[in-house]
Image (cartoon, rainbow, N blue to C red; front, side):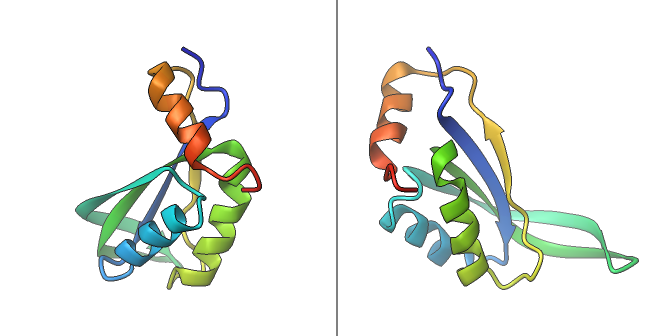
Length: 109
């Protein structure tokens, strides 16, 4: 079970923005699926100060080739100037699931 082309991207966003980001990623074939994890309590350093926010975590199932398109999408729809985008390689998984990701994401990314 190889997942060499599959990646999981993570980003956080204000809860009001998460559904639009997720739906647009799937509609544009940049992701096979996006899970929105309700509320996460984020504590982070920003501009020299410790900040706290309630955010939603988006778990984006996609391919390595689609990462630039996801970054463009986040630049377009995400309200933060500096948004999180972290891509994690999938080293293994269900062959059928990984194939579904590959066929659900546009090859043009």
